[in-house]
Length: 299
Image (cartoon, rainbow, N blue to C red):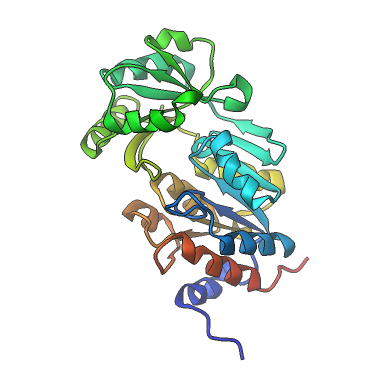
């Protein structure tokens, strides 16, 4: 006799939109697939392979850039749709063939750079096209940003004046810092550019710290998931999404069924249809197993 389903599995199976196996599972990386040691648990790799073998398409939507995301995708080693830069860029993996790009409004790069003064900030580009990951606008550094540069500064072009970015397409602007500064600048950006920009306070787990991230208003994981669904000719009801942070909220809301990880913040939990029980990424394999055990959708 099969054991009774865990509470989270029972809730999922009872959901009308999940009476059958999802055709696509969309997953955040950090805090969902990748654990606090910056590793993917072997059980997760096995379950992702089992999902693929059972005909479930996989998508990974991450705040990481292609190079840093690719290190984990290479461990998984499965064909997938990938959104990097929190949804700005969408790709076919492993070819890294571009599907769509949503860049920061060019006319707002310099005004936002001035608004962030006197703080230093990172201005990310399409690294697979431009050959480097970001411009580092050097001003008053923060301890969090210095830590970030110690690990990833070799991918940066250090500049003193925002005008040096002219001619480059910026995907996003990021400024890690203390909570009070990040929240204050987020509110200031939102107040100054309501409807023109999307500003979020997102947890960067590898430092760890809070980070201000600023995008084109339509550059988010929800819009990226919609583009992925269109590419695969899938409907929302055929998609399950799983994530844990602020930048996952739009993805969870757009999917037919959104699942927040156990450690998810209040906004992400409110955006989900269900909150996973447990402690973190080590609970993902059980969820994936239950999802693929659902009856297949009839042709």
